[in-house]
Image (tube, rainbow, N blue to C red; front, side):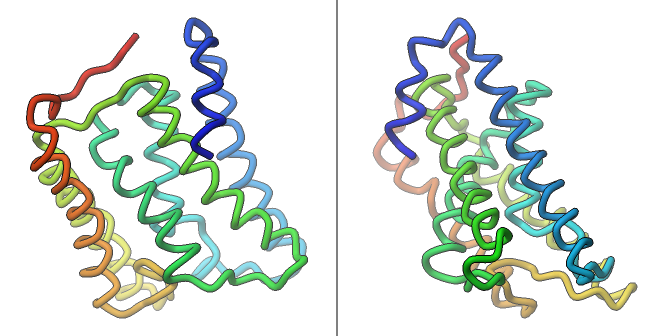
Length: 198
């Protein structure tokens, strides 16, 4: 995941092609997952919509690469790490039994977030800005408030984060996505600004 994006450095003049491929893979993976759930007869609008934290992070990735909303990298940087590495290694049991195709799609969805993050940092040279912590807290508030309202008023059962529906998972997610920026504030003060290498 770390080496592959670096290999595309020679394709930097054609980076828009790489970015469209990343966005296309994210969209195809989400669509294929939804179609698979429907085909297995387990689709429920109260639990199956692609609106989890990792899905929201994927939408942010599309907004950055496809719609050129570069300022969202402030949020994507920490969300992609927590939603991929955090969920698959430390917190979340894969909800589909091996060798179900959804098992592999789940892992692939996390891998593509890591790949996109490394690509933006190593190839496009994105850097987070001084407002990263504030931006992260704002997006966390918007996202978790939306999920809370949805669960409260529609009897839906969407997880807040880490396959958990309790409020502690919200606090954990906000803490983890915020604390990632602390080392940058401490050790990289001179470069703590937002630049995009075009």
